[in-house]
Length: 189
Image 1: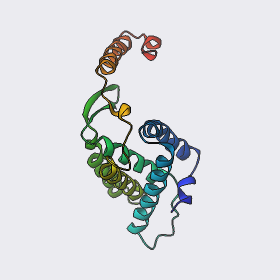
Image 2: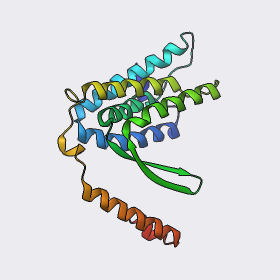
Image 3: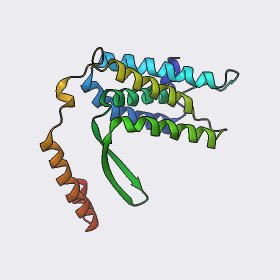
């Protein structure tokens, strides 16, 4: 249940998980603390591993990777923020942008995506149910304990209107720079 979270199926697998952990980890560590973050990581990773194991009890395929735990961290993040609006970035071919929506919107979308992937690629070595188990358990942990054990530091959840206005201004300028093929200036925004 725990050692699988520290093994990976190759360098690309490891780097992919570490990238997402890097993105989520800083925010959650700032919102909570290191000890809670590690405990949540291990707990949601174990629940993800159990979820994976429950799908096929006779499988001899070993589970490797931190995806269940990382999905759990995403679930905790979403569970804590719940109705608070956050920025979602998207890209489709050459079109990209962002929109704001309640954080909670990501849970059902991601669970449905994982189920579609599972049913579309039945022979895939990806542990989709480890992702689902981690995500759902993390979301429940975040939601249930957000006002008690997982109570966040107030300064991390405060909405700063000046910061949002500055972001919108810099984002608009970066898009203009891209349209005018000034990529170096856009990168610095």
